[in-house]
Length: 597
Figure 1 (tube, rainbow, N blue to C red):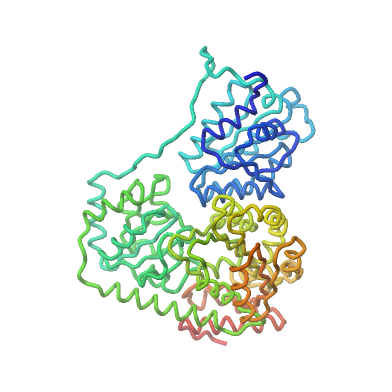
Figure 2 (tube, rainbow, N blue to C red; figure 1 turned 30 degrees about the vertical axis):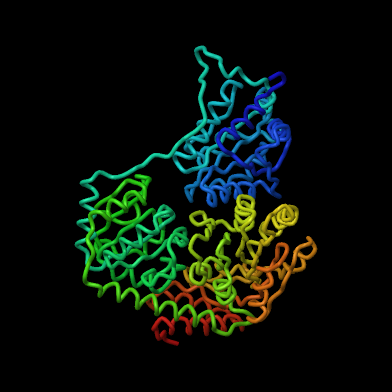
């Protein structure tokens, strides 16, 4: 085609790899590709307010769809801004391709304006594949390798395109000579299953155990039926990592909920009491909440052999797809008659549910944040998509929000970066605009970049089949998770200058953008706000004024572990600290502890 450029080829390659939308922010360094996107009309270009948010959107797209997320930026500061989102993809193992512009090849090395060594910049976050194009003939091959590597390694990759390469004439796709590699797009997943003898060895370990625990991660997606059947045969209890929370219905009587610092007492009991552990698709870092080394014999299933035996000593590592491997295990595991362990697990689950209900119902000043999230559970639409930010809101999500079967929920888990909820929610909505989205965030995360991306929501909602996009902001005017970490890990008081946040009128900001804003300052107003938001004809921001005195209490810790919390609070001469200590003692008493005064 006359006048066809390398940028046109790039856009065609996007289409060949099934890319539906590209998230980014324009700039002169990537103008060639921007122009080609305009000419082609597809994929859709989604303009974020900031390149970091664009990268988060690409990660969110990968999480909610299972496809490769694509983000686009100019060189220099635009490229730097992508890093946080790309690290989110790396640490949560999601396929993302970043296409980044660069200055003209002829000026590289001259300390030109916005000149950064981009291959070096992305060398760690995109360690599996990062390359700069030096000729038009390279570009198809680089893109194919970037997409294929992202999918094969479940990680971010990067292609750097100098401006002169973008605007050069597209190469002849049929060129056949030395030094020219002609590649093709496309990658089909394969079945990966362990050897039969390894399945038999794993079944022997699981069958020999009397108190079996199963810990699920995101790698167990799609295997809920197999997990349920295996747990029933073994009389096992099941816990989930934070990323594994949506895998299995938490309403099952043997599901103990999320494990770890922000997990449940039932999961802590399960891990403490088991003599056998099956890890399925999880790389959860909270190793101090695993069984003690030597306590349990362990079997692990993972598609990535690099993760086998990394978090816990494993007797039988199984390299394979979770569903396929579990089906083979089921053929080798016989039902167990003794149900004493299962009955004990179910008792822990019932006790946890009562603890959680009591905690959420406790009076607070003005609203208990646990209640604000728990009130959503009974109202959450069966077709919803949930996005969760980082901070104290993750504790309340992990412990109090019960997801209907099939409802996806995602957050920045391993990187734990604030500011992910709005970009994730937008990616989810753009992928499935006929489904409602609920984003849960703290006021710190909203101030960091949520307010900006609310502008993107306001600009796009009229195009959605279902306009419901509900943002619930837990507004406690405090960086609460860090405040409680300071007390817990350092035994130090809250540093007001560092932790206190401005009281932002989130609801009024929503109204200024043409959305609905609701401010809730009592439990009754919270329930009414959820009802109104989930029946609204446009996006809604619920500004819930919550109490920063509610503790972020790790489950079932001995007094020595929480003693620094009391010490930190004792050093705070404030009414807030006295309320926080009272809440801490109340919640500890609910777990059965009688801490000294």
